[in-house]
Image 1 (cartoon, rainbow, N blue to C red):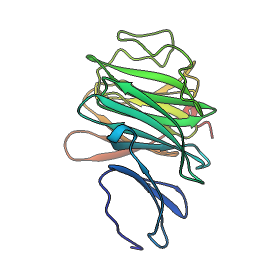
Image 2 (cartoon, helix red, strand yellow; image 1 turned 90 degrees about the horizontal axis):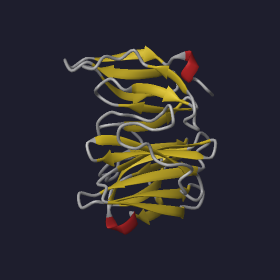
Image 3 (cartoon, helix red, strand yellow; image 1 turned 45 degrees about the vertical axis):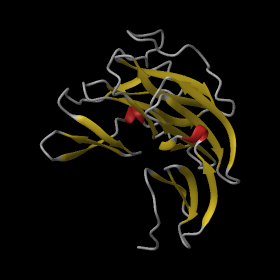
Length: 218
């Protein structure tokens, strides 16, 4: 082990020499020395819970969570630690980002009893279309599932998963569903990489399965 340091949440390495950790602050450290290179306060005082980066590691997305309904999304330039844009989600307790991919960001957040996916433009965080409403929407990537939906990016595609069996990959624009994963309603997708995804079956076992070829865009 090279170094250890305090971290209250998720960690994400965006290149071989840099790691970002989430918590009350968004902190970038050198993997080799452990030194703090950048420190950015979480927007509006929330705690950063989710991190995502583009495929070349130049842009970082930080999704904050707060039990008081003050979630927000922040876009950070990795090379400088500069905050490029922040988008509040009033009334939401949690927002999870995926991407950016091809200039597009996806976020998942609660919407009453249904999970909502929204598509944003990288750089400005401006919506590029209406969010998927409760009960469905006009994009194939929209969901009618519950508010446990998560979103992530891997292998050049966007992935939406949740425990009740809604598990699929789709194009970065959301216009095309690429594949549905053969996961049952009693299984839970707990991790997705460029080559494999990982499923928990509820009995303490984790299974690795190959990413469908249709989902491999890189």
